[in-house]
Image (cartoon, rainbow, N blue to C red; front, top):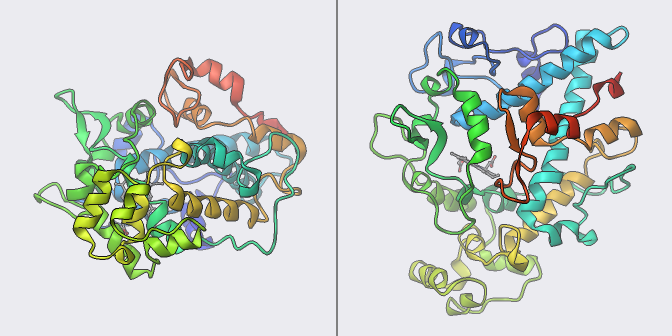
Length: 401
Ligand code: HEM
């Protein structure tokens, strides 16, 4: 949202009322929607034009596809909604004080959604709630889990392998084309022609909540195997999975067996022994590619394991790296939103009410959505009206005055 340098934040701020800049293209103004601002054409978009520029946000990878433009725009809308409220009510408010307070609240909301809604699904309830893992949030009061000796940096094993959850993504983005089918994913890559189309961002916000994720397994979508970075006028693109393996090697990620050892998991002695941790088909596939069990790359081996406890997404080796990373990001961060001296007790309770569904309801024209938006809607997670969702789980912003 804000970048990790002062210069990024300065570029993205509007300079008044603590707000962030919004897109001023006539195409977007005519739709009366709020979208992330236009950015430099040096960002390698397909055929940018003055009305359809590449976009700018805290992370330049926002330009990768329309889903990211939509999500960044959603959180930008939330930032500006909160800033507008605070600026007109905080005594002596300036652009600077309002921006910093809003940024702190939005950062806390992102942490809350990540640890309350996303991480339990990734790890599974048992690993998430196991007190020894130090990942679970509290329901009330301050957390005392901050430890200055915990290193809060991101491990290469996490970024280059275990958190590359690309297996979950499908071949299409849920925006309907003229023929009523969803748009092929590759048409959205770096393509401003897509994200400046009328209604696309809000269709996507609603559609991404409706669309089911793919299963976590080694069957990756065609688009990831064949079409990554594919410009619309070329027949093929990159193989993202090959890139994941190669990226792991470039970055010196240890092998699958070394990582199992690091995680204290039982050794695997041969390629045929892999059947203890994966399906016979996956074991045979790995044996057809690698000559020696010691050569198996972390990404390939970790992706192949059966899920821990039959719940959560990944097998035990990825789960070990994910759990370790989520613990460190929380307990090594002295500004983690649950820590004492970050928010007052009543502000903290307001942040604890927030869900991704609330943010969608408050900042897009959808009428209903399931309350746990990262899970498919079902009898136990039914569609609810936005009115009910907002009444049940939105922050009282006057707690921050
Ligand atoms: C939805 C469609 C997605 C597309 C098209 C996509 C595409 C990409 C691409 C092109 C890269 C850079 C490749 C490289 O440098 O090797 C990347 C990196 C990455 N992706 Fe995705 N991705 C998607 C979803 C996800 C999801 C759902 C996750 C899981 C949280 C994820 C996690 C990552 C991570 C951790 C990296 C490495 C980032 C880094 O090292 O800084 N991606 N992705």
